[in-house]
Every structure is written in structure tokens, then in C-alpha cells.
Picture 1 (spheres, rainbow, N blue to C red):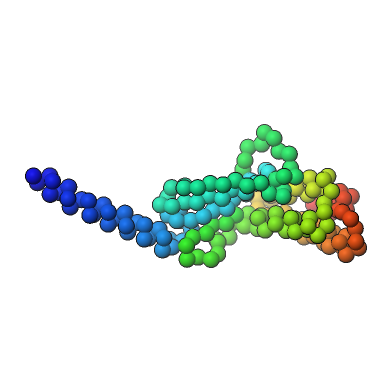
Picture 2: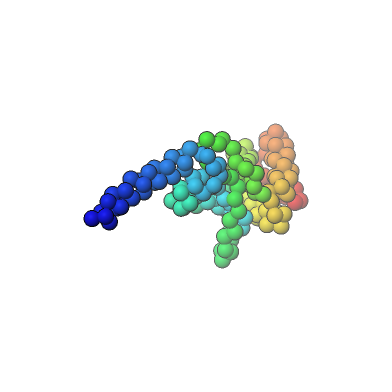
Length: 174
């Protein structure tokens, strides 16, 4: 009989703890922790993007998408090397600065440049390979950002001159 009384007392306690954990996870009290967050990562070998969702320290969703860069690179047999780009939590509208914080923006910039002046297939492959090489050798997105700036200048000049496309011979050295 005493066991049944104890059992009845545990049920509200467990339910209360679960409710408290849910409220804390939604509130954003612990920003950027796997208690409740969304993460974006980039594979520095292929340029693919992975988005993961964590709730109560459990990964509840994962999605891997191809990008302009990954569609240009042929990287068979290379194991993915994922690096964090952004981390978001409820109540926070910014991410802490990670080493590859600029990588997704760099990929989007390449897509925009390609919209203004189409890259020929070989030029696209060359730029994509160079970007991934710079991410790997530099240990961050900084060197790739500097190279992207040079590519952007070339693309802008060619666009203003009315060129039909960007060729490998137009590309700057890394």
C-alpha cells in the first residue's frame, strides 16, 4: 500500500520535471546549446551544406543539401569533413563566430556572381576546387573570402564590359 502512495507522488514530479525541461529548452535560456538549437555546417571537401536540429540534447533532424559549389566539384571517395558555420537558438538572432562563419555567404556570393555573368563549366570547376582547397589549407573561410573578392572584381569587370561568360583564363590566381 505504501508503494502505491509513493508511485502516485512520483508521477506529478516526473511530469513537472518534463514540463520544466520543455519550457527551459524553448525559452532560449542557454543560447546555442544542444538543449535547443539549429546548426549549419559545410563540408570543406565538397561544399555541401548540412543543417541539423537539436532538442533536449538529441538530434531530431538532419538535412544535407547540394550547393552551387558542390554541383561543380567531382569529389568521389573523399570523406566529408564537416565544420560548423552557424548556430542559432530561440530568442537569439545571431550566431557565435565560428572559423568557417563566412563559408555559406561565400557560396551564395558565387551563385550571385554566376547569375550576373555565367561561369563556363571549367571556370566553375576551377573556382569551386580553389575555394575548397583554400578552406582546407587555411583552416577557416578567410583565405577563400580574399580569393572570392578577386573573382568578384573580375566578374564585375566582365559584366560591365558585356562579356558573355567568365572563362578559366579570366580567373585570378588564388
